Length: 293
Image 1 (spheres, rainbow, N blue to C red):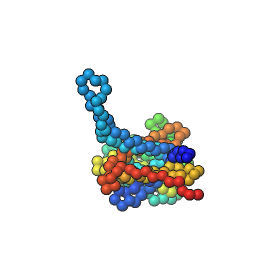
Image 2 (cartoon, helix red, strand yellow):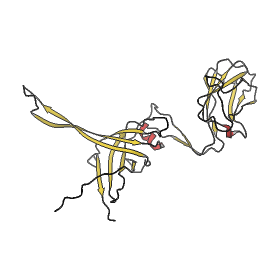
Image 3 (cartoon, rainbow, N blue to C red):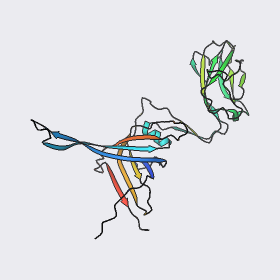
């Protein structure tokens, strides 16, 4: 009788985490580089006397370490790694600006700035980033921007100095009147009182240009709890139609690193640890199949 064909695994196809209570899937990761599951046990050695080698060895505690190399950053992965579900925003045909908020002092006040808004008809000039408004004197302000990554959108943006100022000269703020920041798609409206700002006071806001989708999430809150999940991992289907399935019954992700490298797509090296599921009396299951053609 000839030897059987060796059983082999080729490639990786997908990873789908699921809710342990309902069995429902959080989503699917398909932009994958690799996955690995390493199950290892500590070895407990009995030593004594002048004998250099152990008298006996027994197995100690075991661990099941999971490593996933993923090149996608979907909302569900952020939720499972950091315990906070991102807020998925609806499309914004004319973009958006966040609320103008005091950072240092009281620039946002009845005697200062009332708000920031999109200039009518100029939403195409909105540029993605965070902005700082700073009082130059009692009636004028300068505006600064966090990055030039989106300067080519609409009317080209330009820095005026190394402090990232985008206003060529201070803008005059007038009571109940909007002052446009030319080329950037937004305007600053003065407060309802006699304008009398304090030089050096600052306020911040953020801008999203017109978009089809966006998301926001704050990571690291004190109330955050990282959920336990299940994972189903599939190999690539071979030319023989052979496939592998690994079902990790319970695990917890410990990280989702954000790496940015010049001229490369970002890849997250996710780590997780699996643990015992008493209802299924195990840590994971493995199945393989070679379907009939």
